[in-house]
Structure formats: structure tokens, C-alpha cells
Image (cartoon, rainbow, N blue to C red; front, side):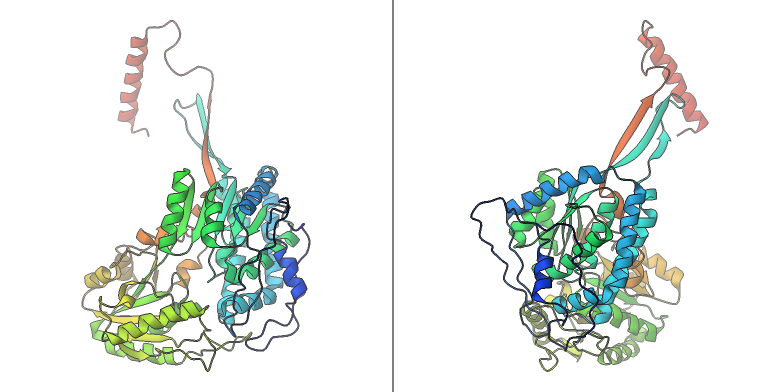
Length: 542
């Protein structure tokens, strides 16, 4: 296991050609990063096993082989984290605030490095990689400034006013286990780590093998920012093995991923009576009312549907348009989609990049091909683009989708959008609420009062008005999470840090004990107390 030291490279001077490893990322640097992975080196005769190397989406060349941890490694990571947490829990809010702000400043200063890594490992457009940096910087700054206030002890009314003093306090959970996915390796990999640390916890992260280097780079940056040794541990390896071992040992679990796996995580944590925060899948609807600014709605739909090539839990997959403006909106949407630049490279020249893997490409292709075979119409896109890159797929708009098609209700998680029409607001809400998911939604209308009324009826954790998804997701002071099969718990805001703590009631009784006075008839005590209770009711006391 690595010691705390500066393992972040200098800012790269060269930009790599599309498809190549970033020129500044050498084997020695990768070896230093992978040194942050926790391995139980105390076992004699242990073989140095590695995960199968991830493939870079730009050219399908291997990125880097990372160690394959096992349950004993996870146990060692949790033990080390727990030892460090006892000291960290006693540190002042000022010390924790300083760590987060130092990390914030380093992240912005070194962002070119992590932008390259995110693109190399995921293939996403550079703008979408930069959005991760901006989001994580905002989270770090927010909890640095507001974390202590969110967790401050709160004085509440005691049983006997004046005699019973009661304070509600927050105490850290202990060791937080975080299992994060590949699609947003910086934001989802680190966005929960920051408030967990700010609340006084230690963290053990299970990095996705596809994007382990991004997390390890960030772990090194946190060390430079002043993170105490052992407080944030990282493990890698097979999800069902390593992830399950982490769920079995952590004091609280954060999981972002599929609904199917989320159910397993929740059940496993519940057996230990351990809390879990789950952000899961979505089939997110967008409603365009007849009075909407159609050009703005079309642009907003394209942004929310095709960001990160649709590989985003809150991206739009279903669009319901008032029948009166359906044709006009469809033309604007198709034109805006066709104008997108599909490409790959370490610059800002592309609007969206390739998909992350051959499996993801096959899944997206299967959804579109099955829909077309059953009668759907491709308005634009609908095909792979090997001339652009081995995993590139055109942004796609479908019409004529029916419930008989998988793309209608199943999460595609790719650059595919289905277009429908509706007759009334009530029907639009009913359609938006179809299915089992409830993560994010969007309503476009010039009548924002009517849109707000509709929003309250949509069963989603976030509803954006005149924006696709970014307004809610980027508002760090507001909670973000799902309803129904889209998860439980929230990240961001007050709940995003309080979930990493337990409530503790501190009650102090003064001057006289509660209950009947010694040596006095109990019946007299009960009679007098009943009289006081009736008086408090008449006075309207709480």
C-alpha cells in the first residue's frame, strides 16, 4: 500500500493524437497511481494478480492493468480506514474545510490531466469531461462552506421546559463504502467521498476497472491536498467479489449503478442493518407543452439526451410533445441532432464521443434494430460509425415506438431518443409516470406556473422546468436522487452529508428528576401531570 506523497504528474504539455494514450501518461506514472490500491501484502506467497486491462474507447487498445483485489484486501482496507477514522473524527470543522478547499484549488489547477484521463478511459467529449471537473469543484466548495452548518448540533425542546436540556447531534458513521460506475468516474467516484470525509468518516472506494486511473489520480491529488494517511482507501477487482465484500464490511454504503444490482446491494446491507444510498437507473421523460419555446426546447432536449453519448443516468430517453406542435418540434429536434459533431480527440472539437465499450455499442444497436424491425422509424442517426471510431454511434431519434419494443420502457443508456405525442397535460403526466423508474424529468413551457403544477404530479426525484437535466443536477444545495426503482437516498445538499452520520440525542435533566417525587403518592403525581397536559393542549403548546 502506498504512502502519502505527491503522485500527480505535472500538467501535460502535449496533446495526444485521437486514439492514442495521452503522451504524458507513462508506465512509471501508472505504476505510481496503482500503488494507491490497497493490497494485503502480509499474506506470504501471494501472487500479484491483475484485472484484465480495460480497453480505451478511442482505439480499443489496452489502458492499464490494475491489481485484482480480493475479500481479504477489502478487509485490510476497511481496517486501515477505521484506524485512521478515529483520529479524523476528532478534527475540527476548520481542518476538514481546509482539506476540501485545497483539493478544490488543485483540481482546477491540474484539470488538464484528469480531462485527458477521463477521455482516455471513457471516450466522452472533452466538454462532458470538463463538466465532471466543474461539478466536483462545486461539491468541494459547497461542503467546505456549508458542511459544518449542516452537521451543527441543534437545541430542541426537552420533556420539561427549563429542566430538561436536549441537543440533537450528528456523529459520523465510521467507514463509508462507495461503489461507483464508469460513466462519470470523477463526479460519481469522488462526489460522495468529499461529504463523507467532511462529516468525519473514512472511505473505502471500489473503483470500476474501466476507469480506475481517474480515481487513482484523484486519490493522489487528495494526498497532495493534505488528506491523512489511510483515510481514503481504494480497491479494484471483480464487482460481485470486491463490491460485495465492501458492502459486507462498511458502516454505510453508497452505490450508483443498475437497479438490478442496487437491489442486491440494498438487501445485503439490510441484513447487517447498515444504511445504503442508491442512485439507480432511469428512463427519463421530457414534456414539451404547446406554449413552449420550441427552438429552446429542441436545443435543451438534444443537450440532455446526448450528453456523454447518452451514458448518463439522468439523460432524456422519452420526449412527449403536444400534438399541436409535434411536427414543428420534430423538425427542429431532428435538425439540432443532425448538427451535432460526433468525434473523438483530446480537444473540444466534438459534441459527443463514442460509447465506452463493445458491449455498450451492441446493447444500443440491439435496441434500435429491434425497434425498427417492429415498425419504428429512424428520423436521424440509427447506425454505428466505424469511420469515426470503433465504438462511435450516431445520435438517434426514433418515432413510432410502441410498448412491444424494448426501447420503449427499458433503459437504453446510449444516444437514443424516442418521440411521442400527447393531447392534454393530464395525459402527458400519465405518460411521463409510466414504467417503474423515477429519476429525472423535464417540462418545457412559457407558462411556468402551469409547468410547476405539472411537475408536482411527476413521480421523479428531480423535475427541471425549461432545462433538460443540468439545472437540478448542478444545484448542489438541493438533493438529487430517485423515486421508485430509481433508488433511495440523496446526494448533494443537506441530506447529501447528513446521510453519512447518525443522529444522537443528548438529554440532560436538571434540578429535579422526572417521575413521581420520592415518598409522595403516585396517584397525586399522575393527577397533577394530567392537569398540566390538558393546560398545554389549551394553550396550543407543541
